[in-house]
Image 1 (tube, rainbow, N blue to C red):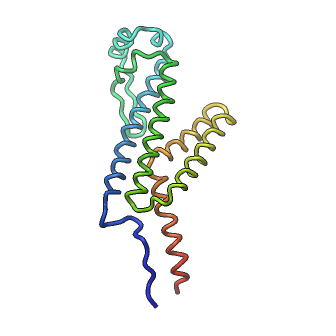
Image 2: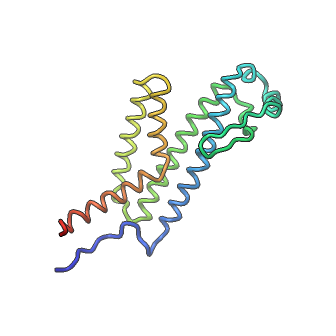
Image 3: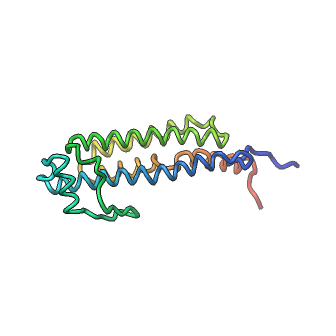
Length: 187
């Protein structure tokens, strides 16, 4: 009896997928840093309404005199990004949504690239299904659960999509199930 041959889960001969995975991790770190900076800036403006009404120059001076250092997870913010000073709170809220959507599109493209470089591109429909399910859950919690609780759940699903996990799951899980099915039970 000959052992079945399988398509490699993560090909060693063409390790371009490692570069894609590293790119996902690096991009993930910096995109999260940008969102944390933006959220912190918005929070400071909401806590200090007078600052939100200032001109960009006065806001910059206010932040220089009143730094708002904060540690969120492993991100330490010593100062704010000066580019934020020229935007109003509603503009910053739109920027936050645009940033999230843009990042999501970049991660979708990276997921597709990961599937292609691992040789599992035929599984791309599962990527669509995974994004659709996560998007539906995010929308449901944002609409049906008011306040911080709904936002927190939606944020966690967004964080899942903005990581290498969707493409890793789509590559690993079916490949491992295929091996379990064809190998049968072992003694």
